[in-house]
Length: 304
Image (cartoon, rainbow, N blue to C red; front, side, top):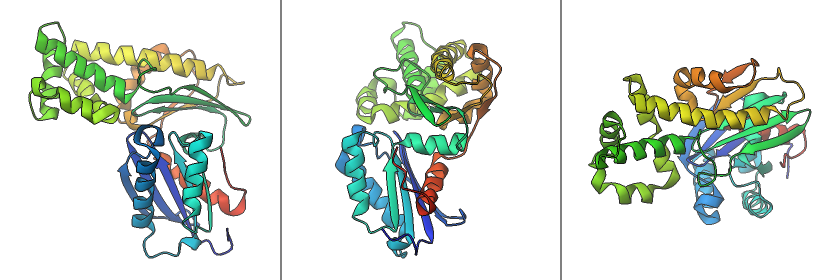
């Protein structure tokens, strides 16, 4: 790698739903952003993940000598030894001036905590918390939709769908949630089951906004769904906070569900153990990846 001629930094943040690319100059001024589909090699397969990364790299860096670019790719599922090496080998084939890779954890910690102690929580398609304390990092949750019980976009969306189909069957549920779900599907529920299963976790998570819209309209079932999911999220957060040496350190919540922070925060405050700062951040995680790409130039390569 030749770091001497680097003029640009490329951050790549790959999550369960989308992969975001951010190209900046070495002074962190934004040049171009792009969002593509998921690059999680666990969910999508390694070949599909590489295809997304290749497409994004060429689209964002077109016309630039790749030897002038430093890259950091933080990919969900990319932190395991096998996937990390495969992605590293893949990035090495482009001829970047510098590159490094790890999991999306690295991007989250950089974007949310900026190197400080505290807890960073992602509430996106999935849910996971990372406790950072004096250089040590501990993970809580984030085991995927088949294991985690709630607090994620998937679980909000799944609860919305469950309520809609319960109402359809006459087993309870919410009429309003059922109507809002059909509006989002653009077809009737009875004919949508195959589409829902084909769409996978990310598609199920796309129904999470139905719950919040129903809540705004005074739906009691929506309130119950929010309360249940936030209780589960609080269990993860409270456990993550127990690994901090100072109980006053901040908790930063990131991810797609931050768009609903005005609704979520009062529920969250009922279940969080203490009065430490609770911050909702809408800063894109790819900003953290771009900062780590910059750190490649003057520091060592980052390999989490």
